[in-house]
Image (cartoon, rainbow, N blue to C red):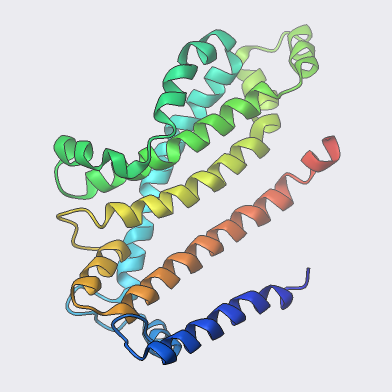
Length: 253
């Protein structure tokens, strides 16, 4: 599909938004398109003494990266281990399946009780949010590695480390990468929710809640658009890497 065709639906949505805003004629309910885009075109302007739209967005992105990397450092090695050892995978399956559906926001009270107000609580919510998609995708990717490849490695007397680095990890990489893609999306959603917790003083989620208290709906929508733009931007990067590095996966099916 041509890129300009994909613009049709967003243009229609913006048109409906502008029409509704004009009909409602109340910026505290729905501001006009130009009032919101004027905020987006001045991302470095100070917002009621809490920093600019750009600075708060960068703060959120920094927190996401930290939490995401911690989740990767835990989930990928653990997923490789569990996927390679059926007994331990089955042994832990119920625990994973019990914790996996719990939304990150449900952990907020415990996060505040364990870590208090601040950066640690926010990072904990991000890690909890994205660790399970990465873990499950890694396990499934490792389990789908062809048995014939592993048996061939044993014939040539490859040790466990060589099998993991030269067979298991490359073969499971597409599934792991897909888990990372999903995990980052959830991490980005989690940080916005975490920044709305009591005690937060920076971040795009905090900016949205702060502006809500002052009835600044144009800044709220501008913040939401920033969240969406970064989300789709990162997803495009993940897809490009997947298409470039793992094109062989489609040929192997």
